[in-house]
Amino acid sequence: MIKSRIDTIEIQSRTLGKTMVVTIYMPTNFCEGLPVLYFMHGRSGDESIIHALYIQTVADRMIADGRMKPMLIVCPRMEDALGLGAFEDYFFNEVMPIVEKQYKTSVRCIGGVSAGGFIALNYAFRHPYLFERVGGHMPAIEDVLDDDDLHYFGTSEQWKANNPLFLVQKCTLPSTMEIYLDAGSEDEGGFYRGCAQLAERLAVRGVLVQNHLNEGHHTIDYIKAHLEEYLMFYAK
Image (cartoon, rainbow, N blue to C red; front, side, top):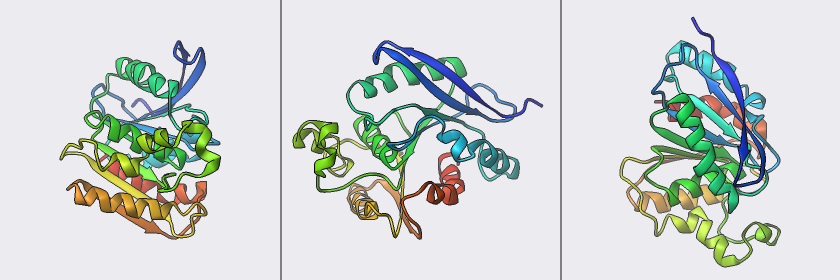
């Protein structure tokens, strides 16, 4: 038996002009053709989220219990950039091709926490045929631009052009896409309101969406408490 492990790979990014790091969970008895989940960290995080959430321990247990199918889980370092600009090029032109060539993966899922949830939803709505299942966990989505966030976008027009709440009203979404949203009822950013708005707009579009309002705050403990639910969604 080949035990599960966490791989760490370095990417010499031409797009960003620096070395970037990606962590990858490989399940026990890894084989080619597994689905892959790209899981994005929040603003203050990095690729070490794979360790902070004990993803290896949780996934190993769930696979052994038959509650999820084996899959790769990839946590790329995305820094504090909301996945915009050069970071989008880096992810699609470097991270995905390198991972999928090296590990010979099959279908893709994408998800993330907080700002990473924003990234996942933004990427999925703007590249809708690349991902089968999409998750935003306490995702940083709002219907009003916070002045503190303007520096990410440059203009209010660019904020709107990347905001999942507005993207969902005009983008093409395949009927096969499934979306999972959730947030804590005491989320200090009030992101549960953004989830409710987005879920309503997705439902109008006929998209398969589930939205969960749970107890809890905007913390890593909230994510840990619901990680098993997320993995069951991604690895049906």
